[in-house]
Image (cartoon, rainbow, N blue to C red; front, side):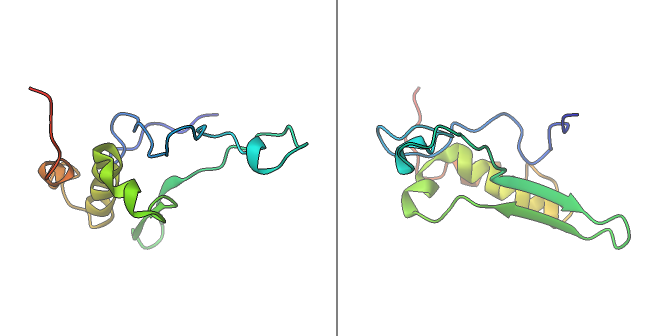
Length: 102
């Protein structure tokens, strides 16, 4: 069973990571342990009883994460969704200050 795409996520983000860091692979941190665990890093929940909404992001512990416009896009869309606002309301802010190719 898979979850349908969430409106706050849109397309998949590139993911913010440092040079040489492997996405989703924690084996380098645990030598001898060949298990690779995948855990959710973004999720959304809407309570059926109260209609309250929650959007959670594990990303954002490092300031360089916010340099990724795709991360900012998902974060801003998640916040707008939680507030029951138009998820595209803050899209222009996601690229504010970013040098875009012409």
